[in-house]
Length: 406
Ligand SMILES: [Zn+2]
Image 1 (cartoon, rainbow, N blue to C red):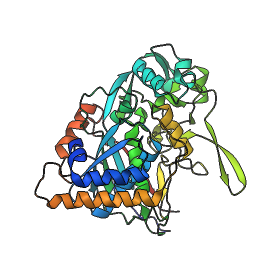
Image 2 (image 1 turned 90 degrees about the vertical axis):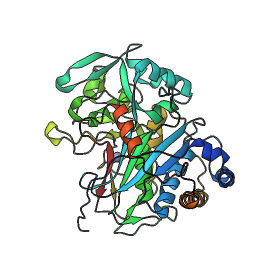
Image 3 (image 1 turned 135 degrees about the vertical axis):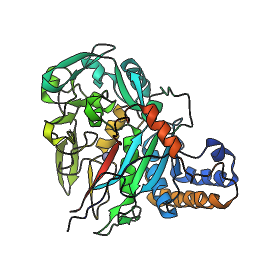
């Protein structure tokens, strides 16, 4: 398999259809009946908007990715607004897709409160158990311990799941997702097939939505200027665990732990009849000069065998990636209400996505532009990035990398 080069993905745009349209337009009432057949009544709602230039097939693929997350995430009052754009040569070299989530700074107290209200995660397994009540400890470069942290970063979508939405703007953009236009994409996720020379579009869309939900690390932001994130509250090394601190450094061996770092989260996967226990390792940073493994820290370690989850940093040609129990556990622990074993009717979810894509496509031609899901939202995206406060240094966000060899 030759190494096909891709340019970066990444960037900006955003936002979505208004809720008014969802609740009033007749065609959408019909749609909600369809949704009822495949998506649980208790589910997160995704409102996608699309930058002009996207195809109806690509819209359907994005809608399917959202539908799949909705089957797992039961936060019934949470509406997530994401703008999607097909860009060419904007993302970094070799990148298939990128996510630029809206970011909020919250108090650690608020984070713990939100987790406590979540009802799924066991509060005693949270970092609370190893930190003082309103502060948490981080291990920094050189082994320095900072024990006075009382703030962290979340994505606005994550913050909605925590019940802490501070924006007061229910219709604001929660993320901007870019997908690389020049890639040889496959759109056959529901059929389970991808040609050996193609990348699966839906898998990458699911991945980028995953970042938007809160699967991000502050370690990826430039110059160490960013605070740790909600996900970083579960990032440990042996060294940091010994000091009862999360590990906020590049490089080394970093693991996802739900018991204050005592051990990595272990989960079992079976290949044939052979169950194997895997450790949940994180990627350790793009900066190889500082000892990072070359991948953004906001991913599972990509060369772990076998596959850890949809939030691994790379995807191969010819492969389809699915949401794993590990992915769900991470989202559970940062505040989402997770159904770990839902019934997934992929054909129904796919039909629903196709219907919605058709409606979105047709709405371009109905003479009413106010609620069009396909529209230029570059100014909304810029506003979202400015308000996030961590995109001010030329850094774009979180992405997934092409891995040419299956
Ligand atoms: Zn990624």
